[in-house]
Length: 355
Ligand code: DAH
Image 1 (cartoon, protein in one colour):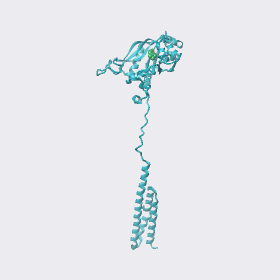
Image 2 (cartoon, helix red, strand yellow):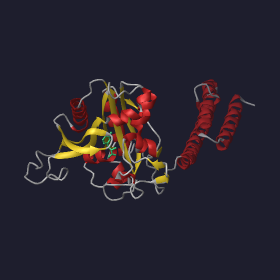
Image 3 (tube, helix red, strand yellow):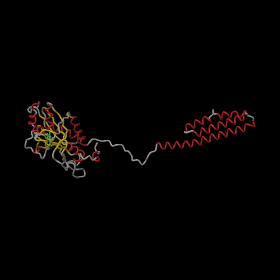
Image 4 (cartoon, protein in one colour):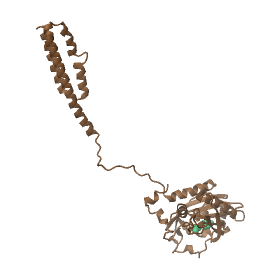
Protein backbone atom coordinates (compact mmCIF):
# COMPACT_ATOMS: atom_id res chain seq x y z
CA UNK A 1 0.00 0.00 0.00
CA UNK A 2 1.37 3.43 -0.88
CA UNK A 3 2.15 5.90 1.86
CA UNK A 4 -0.76 8.00 0.69
CA UNK A 5 -3.22 5.13 0.84
CA UNK A 6 -2.01 4.20 4.29
CA UNK A 7 -2.62 7.74 5.53
CA UNK A 8 -6.07 7.75 3.92
CA UNK A 9 -6.90 4.50 5.72
CA UNK A 10 -5.72 5.93 9.05
CA UNK A 11 -7.79 9.07 8.52
CA UNK A 12 -10.86 6.94 7.83
CA UNK A 13 -10.20 4.92 10.97
CA UNK A 14 -9.75 8.02 13.14
CA UNK A 15 -12.92 9.52 11.71
CA UNK A 16 -14.89 6.33 12.37
CA UNK A 17 -13.66 6.01 15.94
CA UNK A 18 -14.23 9.68 16.78
CA UNK A 19 -17.75 9.84 15.34
CA UNK A 20 -18.92 6.71 17.12
CA UNK A 21 -17.39 7.87 20.43
CA UNK A 22 -19.13 11.25 20.04
CA UNK A 23 -22.52 9.73 19.35
CA UNK A 24 -22.20 7.39 22.35
CA UNK A 25 -21.07 9.94 24.95
CA UNK A 26 -23.54 10.88 27.74
CA UNK A 27 -22.32 14.13 29.31
CA UNK A 28 -20.52 17.36 28.43
CA UNK A 29 -17.45 16.55 30.52
CA UNK A 30 -16.81 13.28 28.69
CA UNK A 31 -17.45 15.00 25.34
CA UNK A 32 -14.70 17.53 26.12
CA UNK A 33 -12.32 14.64 26.85
CA UNK A 34 -13.09 13.22 23.40
CA UNK A 35 -12.48 16.63 21.78
CA UNK A 36 -9.04 16.88 23.34
CA UNK A 37 -8.24 13.27 22.47
CA UNK A 38 -9.27 13.59 18.79
CA UNK A 39 -8.45 17.18 17.88
CA UNK A 40 -6.03 18.41 20.54
CA UNK A 41 -2.43 19.26 19.65
CA UNK A 42 -1.18 15.78 20.47
CA UNK A 43 -4.13 13.96 18.87
CA UNK A 44 -3.68 11.43 16.01
CA UNK A 45 -5.25 13.52 13.22
CA UNK A 46 -3.12 16.67 13.64
CA UNK A 47 0.00 14.52 14.13
CA UNK A 48 -0.78 12.65 10.95
CA UNK A 49 -1.04 15.87 8.90
CA UNK A 50 2.65 16.50 9.53
CA UNK A 51 3.46 13.55 7.30
CA UNK A 52 1.52 15.03 4.37
CA UNK A 53 4.59 17.16 3.51
CA UNK A 54 6.60 13.98 2.98
CA UNK A 55 4.22 12.70 0.27
CA UNK A 56 4.50 13.10 -3.50
CA UNK A 57 3.18 16.48 -4.42
CA UNK A 58 0.47 14.73 -6.47
CA UNK A 59 -0.85 12.80 -3.42
CA UNK A 60 -0.64 15.70 -0.95
CA UNK A 61 -3.86 17.35 -2.11
CA UNK A 62 -5.95 14.22 -1.78
CA UNK A 63 -4.68 13.29 1.70
CA UNK A 64 -4.88 16.90 2.94
CA UNK A 65 -8.44 17.22 1.71
CA UNK A 66 -9.45 13.92 3.35
CA UNK A 67 -7.87 15.01 6.65
CA UNK A 68 -9.64 18.37 6.56
CA UNK A 69 -12.94 16.76 5.71
CA UNK A 70 -12.54 14.31 8.61
CA UNK A 71 -11.61 17.16 10.93
CA UNK A 72 -14.66 19.20 9.85
CA UNK A 73 -16.95 16.24 10.30
CA UNK A 74 -15.60 15.56 13.78
CA UNK A 75 -15.97 19.24 14.75
CA UNK A 76 -19.53 19.37 13.47
CA UNK A 77 -20.37 16.17 15.34
CA UNK A 78 -18.79 17.59 18.54
CA UNK A 79 -20.76 20.83 18.24
CA UNK A 80 -24.03 19.05 17.55
CA UNK A 81 -23.56 16.66 20.45
CA UNK A 82 -22.55 19.49 22.78
CA UNK A 83 -25.77 21.36 22.02
CA UNK A 84 -27.87 18.25 22.58
CA UNK A 85 -26.15 17.37 25.85
CA UNK A 86 -26.38 20.95 27.16
CA UNK A 87 -30.10 21.06 26.63
CA UNK A 88 -30.62 17.70 28.36
CA UNK A 89 -28.43 18.83 31.24
CA UNK A 90 -30.24 22.16 31.54
CA UNK A 91 -33.58 20.35 31.70
CA UNK A 92 -32.23 18.13 34.48
CA UNK A 93 -30.98 21.15 36.44
CA UNK A 94 -34.27 22.99 36.07
CA UNK A 95 -36.21 19.95 37.21
CA UNK A 96 -33.92 19.59 40.22
CA UNK A 97 -34.28 23.15 41.50
CA UNK A 98 -37.84 23.83 40.58
CA UNK A 99 -39.61 26.25 42.98
CA UNK A 100 -43.36 25.88 43.19
CA UNK A 101 -44.59 29.43 43.52
CA UNK A 102 -48.12 28.24 44.19
CA UNK A 103 -47.16 26.62 47.52
CA UNK A 104 -48.22 28.65 50.56
CA UNK A 105 -45.43 30.63 52.22
CA UNK A 106 -43.85 29.43 55.47
CA UNK A 107 -43.41 32.48 57.72
CA UNK A 108 -41.11 32.13 60.73
CA UNK A 109 -42.98 30.91 63.82
CA UNK A 110 -43.83 33.73 66.18
CA UNK A 111 -41.70 33.82 69.32
CA UNK A 112 -43.72 33.78 72.55
CA UNK A 113 -43.42 36.40 75.22
CA UNK A 114 -44.23 36.80 78.89
CA UNK A 115 -47.74 37.78 79.92
CA UNK A 116 -47.98 41.38 81.10
CA UNK A 117 -48.82 40.10 84.58
CA UNK A 118 -45.55 38.19 84.81
CA UNK A 119 -43.66 41.19 83.48
CA UNK A 120 -45.30 43.46 86.07
CA UNK A 121 -44.68 41.05 88.96
CA UNK A 122 -41.01 40.76 87.99
CA UNK A 123 -40.63 44.53 87.74
CA UNK A 124 -42.04 44.94 91.26
CA UNK A 125 -39.83 42.14 92.57
CA UNK A 126 -36.74 43.71 90.97
CA UNK A 127 -37.43 47.06 92.64
CA UNK A 128 -37.79 45.55 96.12
CA UNK A 129 -34.93 43.09 95.71
CA UNK A 130 -32.87 46.19 94.84
CA UNK A 131 -33.94 47.66 98.22
CA UNK A 132 -32.71 44.56 100.06
CA UNK A 133 -35.90 42.52 100.27
CA UNK A 134 -36.04 38.82 99.56
CA UNK A 135 -38.91 36.88 98.03
CA UNK A 136 -41.07 34.60 100.20
CA UNK A 137 -43.94 32.40 99.09
CA UNK A 138 -46.88 30.60 100.68
CA UNK A 139 -49.62 28.20 99.58
CA UNK A 140 -52.64 29.23 97.49
CA UNK A 141 -54.85 26.93 99.58
CA UNK A 142 -54.49 28.35 103.07
CA UNK A 143 -55.84 27.69 106.53
CA UNK A 144 -58.33 30.05 108.14
CA UNK A 145 -55.70 30.48 110.86
CA UNK A 146 -53.07 32.04 108.57
CA UNK A 147 -55.54 33.83 106.28
CA UNK A 148 -57.57 35.47 109.09
CA UNK A 149 -56.88 34.54 112.74
CA UNK A 150 -53.13 35.15 112.91
CA UNK A 151 -53.73 38.43 111.08
CA UNK A 152 -55.92 39.77 113.90
CA UNK A 153 -59.11 39.46 111.84
CA UNK A 154 -62.14 39.16 114.12
CA UNK A 155 -64.58 36.25 113.62
CA UNK A 156 -67.20 38.83 112.60
CA UNK A 157 -65.12 40.49 109.86
CA UNK A 158 -67.11 40.58 106.58
CA UNK A 159 -64.23 39.17 104.49
CA UNK A 160 -64.71 35.86 106.32
CA UNK A 161 -68.20 35.34 104.90
CA UNK A 162 -68.86 32.42 102.59
CA UNK A 163 -70.31 34.89 100.10
CA UNK A 164 -66.91 36.64 99.81
CA UNK A 165 -64.40 33.84 100.21
CA UNK A 166 -63.95 30.41 98.61
CA UNK A 167 -64.05 27.90 101.47
CA UNK A 168 -62.63 24.42 100.92
CA UNK A 169 -63.82 23.44 104.40
CA UNK A 170 -64.59 25.27 107.66
CA UNK A 171 -60.85 25.58 108.35
CA UNK A 172 -59.41 25.88 104.83
CA UNK A 173 -59.85 28.63 102.20
CA UNK A 174 -58.38 29.75 98.90
CA UNK A 175 -56.34 32.61 100.31
CA UNK A 176 -58.07 35.97 99.91
CA UNK A 177 -54.81 37.94 100.05
CA UNK A 178 -51.05 37.36 100.26
CA UNK A 179 -50.95 38.69 103.85
CA UNK A 180 -50.83 35.15 105.39
CA UNK A 181 -47.34 34.82 103.91
CA UNK A 182 -46.27 37.55 106.39
CA UNK A 183 -47.03 35.17 109.24
CA UNK A 184 -45.41 32.17 107.55
CA UNK A 185 -42.26 34.20 106.77
CA UNK A 186 -41.97 35.38 110.38
CA UNK A 187 -42.43 31.81 111.63
CA UNK A 188 -39.49 30.70 109.53
CA UNK A 189 -37.03 33.61 110.05
CA UNK A 190 -36.39 35.81 113.11
CA UNK A 191 -36.18 39.62 112.73
CA UNK A 192 -34.86 41.70 111.06
CA UNK A 193 -37.01 40.58 108.16
CA UNK A 194 -37.55 42.22 104.77
CA UNK A 195 -39.70 40.16 102.39
CA UNK A 196 -42.00 40.55 99.43
CA UNK A 197 -44.49 37.82 98.66
CA UNK A 198 -45.99 37.51 95.17
CA UNK A 199 -48.83 35.12 94.48
CA UNK A 200 -52.30 34.13 93.40
CA UNK A 201 -55.29 35.24 95.48
CA UNK A 202 -59.00 34.42 95.24
CA UNK A 203 -62.26 36.19 95.96
CA UNK A 204 -65.88 35.74 94.92
CA UNK A 205 -65.93 38.77 92.64
CA UNK A 206 -66.30 39.18 88.88
CA UNK A 207 -66.56 42.36 86.78
CA UNK A 208 -64.36 44.66 84.66
CA UNK A 209 -62.02 45.35 87.56
CA UNK A 210 -62.36 42.08 89.56
CA UNK A 211 -61.72 38.46 88.63
CA UNK A 212 -62.23 35.51 91.00
CA UNK A 213 -58.52 34.83 90.74
CA UNK A 214 -56.02 37.68 90.79
CA UNK A 215 -52.51 38.41 92.03
CA UNK A 216 -51.03 40.36 94.89
CA UNK A 217 -47.62 41.41 96.07
CA UNK A 218 -47.25 41.59 99.83
CA UNK A 219 -44.43 43.43 101.57
CA UNK A 220 -43.23 43.17 105.15
CA UNK A 221 -40.35 44.93 106.90
CA UNK A 222 -39.66 44.14 110.55
CA UNK A 223 -36.80 45.70 112.46
CA UNK A 224 -36.10 47.92 115.44
CA UNK A 225 -37.26 51.56 115.14
CA UNK A 226 -39.43 51.15 112.05
CA UNK A 227 -41.84 54.06 111.52
CA UNK A 228 -44.59 55.16 109.18
CA UNK A 229 -41.96 57.48 107.63
CA UNK A 230 -39.97 54.42 106.56
CA UNK A 231 -43.09 53.02 104.91
CA UNK A 232 -43.69 56.30 103.10
CA UNK A 233 -40.09 56.56 101.90
CA UNK A 234 -40.03 52.95 100.73
CA UNK A 235 -43.28 53.32 98.80
CA UNK A 236 -42.08 56.61 97.29
CA UNK A 237 -38.96 54.82 96.00
CA UNK A 238 -41.16 52.06 94.62
CA UNK A 239 -43.62 54.47 92.97
CA UNK A 240 -40.83 56.45 91.32
CA UNK A 241 -39.11 53.32 90.01
CA UNK A 242 -42.39 51.94 88.68
CA UNK A 243 -44.16 55.06 87.41
CA UNK A 244 -41.42 57.68 86.91
CA UNK A 245 -39.09 59.94 88.90
CA UNK A 246 -41.63 62.77 89.16
CA UNK A 247 -44.11 60.71 91.19
CA UNK A 248 -45.23 61.65 94.71
CA UNK A 249 -47.13 59.47 97.19
CA UNK A 250 -49.80 60.34 99.74
CA UNK A 251 -51.13 58.26 102.64
CA UNK A 252 -54.81 58.35 103.57
CA UNK A 253 -56.11 56.87 106.85
CA UNK A 254 -57.93 53.55 106.43
CA UNK A 255 -58.62 50.35 108.33
CA UNK A 256 -57.08 46.90 108.06
CA UNK A 257 -57.26 44.34 110.89
CA UNK A 258 -53.52 43.56 110.74
CA UNK A 259 -52.12 47.12 110.82
CA UNK A 260 -52.49 50.03 113.24
CA UNK A 261 -52.46 52.72 111.98
CA UNK A 262 -53.59 51.61 108.52
CA UNK A 263 -53.40 53.65 105.35
CA UNK A 264 -54.28 53.56 101.70
CA UNK A 265 -51.51 54.82 99.49
CA UNK A 266 -51.95 56.91 96.35
CA UNK A 267 -49.38 57.77 93.73
CA UNK A 268 -49.66 61.02 91.76
CA UNK A 269 -51.06 60.36 88.30
CA UNK A 270 -48.37 59.91 85.67
CA UNK A 271 -50.51 61.11 82.78
CA UNK A 272 -51.78 64.50 83.96
CA UNK A 273 -51.28 67.44 86.28
CA UNK A 274 -53.85 67.51 89.12
CA UNK A 275 -56.38 65.54 87.09
CA UNK A 276 -56.39 67.53 83.85
CA UNK A 277 -54.51 67.06 80.58
CA UNK A 278 -52.70 69.83 78.70
CA UNK A 279 -55.75 70.36 76.44
CA UNK A 280 -57.97 70.97 79.48
CA UNK A 281 -59.79 67.63 79.32
CA UNK A 282 -60.26 65.39 82.34
CA UNK A 283 -57.61 62.66 82.73
CA UNK A 284 -59.07 59.22 81.93
CA UNK A 285 -56.56 57.32 84.07
CA UNK A 286 -57.11 59.06 87.45
CA UNK A 287 -60.61 60.34 86.44
CA UNK A 288 -59.68 63.89 87.33
CA UNK A 289 -58.43 63.02 90.82
CA UNK A 290 -54.72 63.58 90.17
CA UNK A 291 -54.03 60.53 92.38
CA UNK A 292 -54.16 56.77 91.82
CA UNK A 293 -54.77 54.37 94.67
CA UNK A 294 -52.12 51.66 94.48
CA UNK A 295 -52.16 49.70 97.73
CA UNK A 296 -53.10 49.18 101.36
CA UNK A 297 -50.49 49.37 104.09
CA UNK A 298 -49.77 50.21 107.70
CA UNK A 299 -47.74 49.61 110.82
CA UNK A 300 -47.97 45.95 111.82
CA UNK A 301 -50.48 45.50 114.64
CA UNK A 302 -48.81 44.17 117.84
CA UNK A 303 -51.44 41.42 117.89
CA UNK A 304 -49.91 40.00 114.69
CA UNK A 305 -46.48 39.84 116.36
CA UNK A 306 -48.17 38.21 119.33
CA UNK A 307 -49.07 35.28 117.03
CA UNK A 308 -45.37 34.75 116.21
CA UNK A 309 -43.84 35.84 119.53
CA UNK A 310 -42.41 32.33 120.01
CA UNK A 311 -40.36 32.83 116.81
CA UNK A 312 -38.48 35.86 118.12
CA UNK A 313 -41.03 38.62 117.49
CA UNK A 314 -41.45 40.54 120.75
CA UNK A 315 -43.97 43.36 120.12
CA UNK A 316 -42.28 45.44 122.85
CA UNK A 317 -38.96 45.37 121.02
CA UNK A 318 -39.65 45.39 117.29
CA UNK A 319 -41.92 47.21 114.86
CA UNK A 320 -42.77 46.69 111.25
CA UNK A 321 -44.65 47.99 108.29
CA UNK A 322 -46.59 45.94 105.77
CA UNK A 323 -48.27 46.59 102.47
CA UNK A 324 -50.23 44.69 99.86
CA UNK A 325 -50.85 45.66 96.25
CA UNK A 326 -52.76 44.13 93.35
CA UNK A 327 -50.37 43.18 90.56
CA UNK A 328 -53.13 43.48 87.93
CA UNK A 329 -53.97 46.96 89.14
CA UNK A 330 -50.34 48.10 88.93
CA UNK A 331 -50.06 46.68 85.39
CA UNK A 332 -53.37 48.26 84.29
CA UNK A 333 -52.37 51.66 85.64
CA UNK A 334 -48.93 51.54 84.13
CA UNK A 335 -50.14 50.49 80.68
CA UNK A 336 -53.52 52.25 80.59
CA UNK A 337 -55.63 49.06 80.36
CA UNK A 338 -59.28 49.56 81.27
CA UNK A 339 -60.44 45.95 81.57
CA UNK A 340 -58.75 43.51 83.90
CA UNK A 341 -60.01 40.52 81.93
CA UNK A 342 -57.64 41.38 79.04
CA UNK A 343 -54.83 39.85 81.11
CA UNK A 344 -56.49 36.45 81.00
CA UNK A 345 -58.34 36.21 77.71
CA UNK A 346 -55.32 35.13 75.66
CA UNK A 347 -56.06 37.56 72.83
CA UNK A 348 -52.62 37.79 71.25
CA UNK A 349 -53.50 41.14 69.65
CA UNK A 350 -53.52 42.55 73.19
CA UNK A 351 -50.81 40.42 74.75
CA UNK A 352 -48.22 40.93 72.01
CA UNK A 353 -48.19 44.68 72.62
CA UNK A 354 -46.19 44.16 75.81
CA UNK A 355 -42.68 42.80 75.97
N1 DAH B 1 -54.40 42.30 102.44
C1 DAH B 1 -55.01 43.57 102.06
C2 DAH B 1 -56.01 43.35 100.97
O1 DAH B 1 -55.96 42.34 100.31
C3 DAH B 1 -53.94 44.52 101.57
C4 DAH B 1 -53.05 44.96 102.68
C5 DAH B 1 -53.38 46.05 103.46
C6 DAH B 1 -51.89 44.26 102.96
C7 DAH B 1 -52.55 46.46 104.50
C8 DAH B 1 -51.06 44.65 104.00
C9 DAH B 1 -51.42 45.75 104.77
O2 DAH B 1 -49.94 44.02 104.29
O3 DAH B 1 -50.60 46.13 105.77
O4 DAH B 1 -56.82 44.20 100.71
